Image (cartoon, rainbow over all chains, first blue to last red; front, side, top):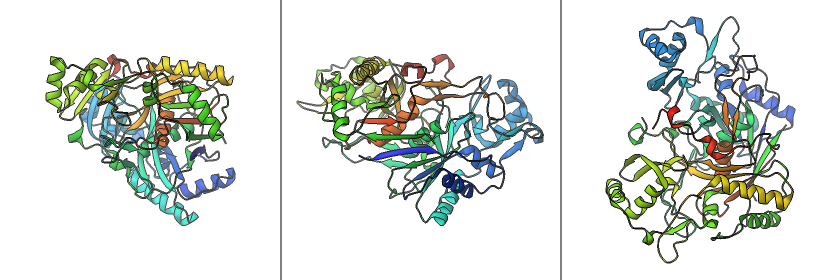
Length: 253
Length: 253
């Protein structure tokens, strides 16, 4: 039977602006004796991609505007963090004391526009880490560099923890993808009794991101890269941007 | 490094009302040479649990009431299906032509109250398959029976495909759990730089359900059981009911 395995790489150092993530990953994989096959998928925590791309912002450098001050007052947040969130957001979707839920300019909906202050170096004052500017492009660059280095087709997912309505507890989701089928669209196909499948578009990228994020851990584990082995190379490749449901179709705006 | 593996069992027969799922799983595992260790998790598609528990309803047996006829008219659905959905629902959350999103009495939010007509036998007329009456109790019975048969602590997740706001494509989620930590609550713990983690409650059950559902497939694969290997036995055990976010905390009602 097909078997899928997931493992984290044990020796990823702290990532700094400008680090070559592919070089870091290949070194860590070699240290752990992990070899790559066609169809393997490397899942990277958003945090290390953002750090490598220099998305760490000193909070003291931010001057909050009027809208940010109002938002901060309404939510008991630091006005400078509110400004960073507004700068990243297309619009604020919900707010209450302690909570700001926005649609990020990338289309993803979540708390604080994905801006994070955990597991971030606060050297010389408090910092905040923004999402990569274009995570699909980041994933594509990593995918291309892995191919150049290995001669293999290795899919890439950049994952982030997400809160959800109705269900407690975060799960990982995909914010950047390359070299994998993101949405497996089975509409129009038939079930095992020959009846047409009504709605079956399977989100492969989010499903893999969820499990990979779980094994990475999210606090002190220092294992921000997972390798997924056992899938064949997908015939069609998508982007995480494909996941964003068109606003006109959405019933929860 | 810790490695997690997932595999589906290849020889699960079509399940009928009254089937002993543990006996079926143990036979299929033996056929595939799969052995169980403490900490392994068996993930079962909701569909086979519902079928074993006799939750298949002939659509012709349903008489729609006034509210169901109104709902059916508004959504272009069969009034009898609308009645089944209303019977399973605490309340209708959103509706538009082709779409009925409800909060199920179990607390889960989704399309059509989880009622499914794909991969269902329609012998003697159209049928619809309801969720198990109490999936956490079903999971607990399976967990206890696995322990009795194997002398091992094998966690159980009953999974179902879920649609989500904002993101296209279904992913699996947990609707019944036993013998595993469902929500890993890290609040109050510290990150790797000693800063307190603000919000980190990780939904382990949904993360595992997502990946397991992906490898099961959802159309003609006939592999409704996955075995997850590599986790240690969790110290604390929860229920899928724990996942339901209290309505008072929810911003998307």
